[in-house]
Image (cartoon, rainbow, N blue to C red; front, side, top):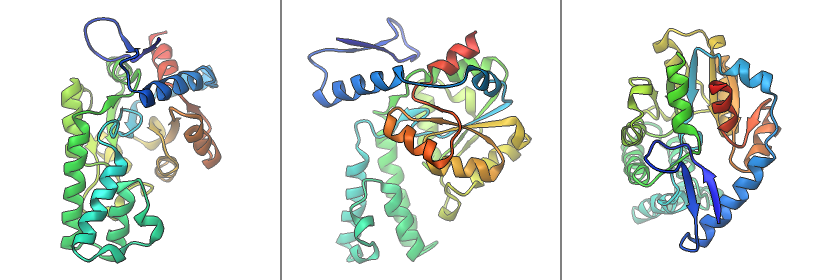
Length: 271
């Protein structure tokens, strides 16, 4: 039996109970992540400096929740491919793009060949509908809910800067009772797909709306594209990766501080 703190806002023990009823793959993921979290290495001084940020920009899928926990991203990408194939458009993508487990790769690939077209508009809407389905069964990132609430109560302002649809973010936050911590500062995918990260467009929109200087902000992201967007916007970056492979990718991309759990941030704020 493994008990792992989730930090979610609910009645009863703040744990995820893993039993014989838990799917085997889920048990393996949780145990693996628990092991990685024990290896987390960070500098407390840097964390104390980061929690003083006036503005915190959150990537969504990863730091806030695991969007495709049950409605799997691989199935979504395959569904988009099937939709293209049914219209005789499978040849728009190269072999790597056809095999990708990431639906965002499919969308961006089509946009590169037919930017601003009705085809891209319809494909993006299909992806948004899949993301909305996924949001209904998304898993909250451990410690994210109380961290967001505590940081907001401490006076920092929150914004979401994501490549997902803002409709999806709003639906998820409403379900978790977190809308008040962010609204109206949710900046996600628009019709101009060239503005997706690593372009810093959504970060710059957030900073302008919050009337915040880049140096007063911190971004929490889980991918090298998040890091690049933060660097281009002049914003400090904190990497979050629930597994050592993703953490290694962030470090290799140049991230100075990478956490495999958000718990140290929450403890620093409460301390």
